[in-house]
Amino acid sequence: MSIEVTLDENDRIDHALRVFKRKVQRSGILADLRRRRHYVKPSQARQIKAAAARRRKRAAARRAG
Image 1 (cartoon, rainbow, N blue to C red):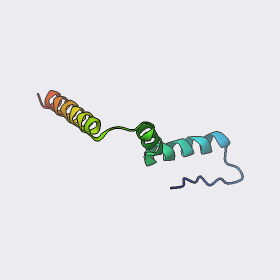
Image 2: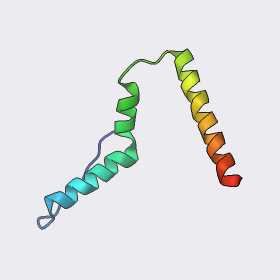
Image 3: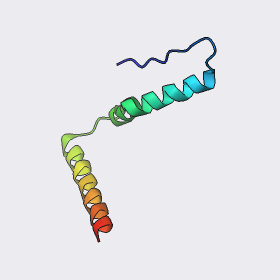
Image 4: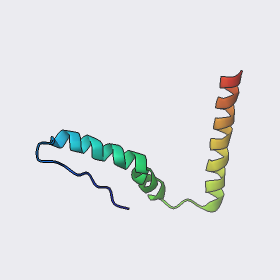
């Protein structure tokens, strides 16, 4: 997966950098790298997933309530 930012002759570098950062953020590359930084055992992954579901459920109940 490659991210490209094309520049014209009169484009500013800071604008191109901002566009590049936005594209990287939207693609999820950095989030994927952070997630893969350490090995997570399958049992631990299930616990993390269940905890996230509980948080989402509590947040939904707070919004509805």
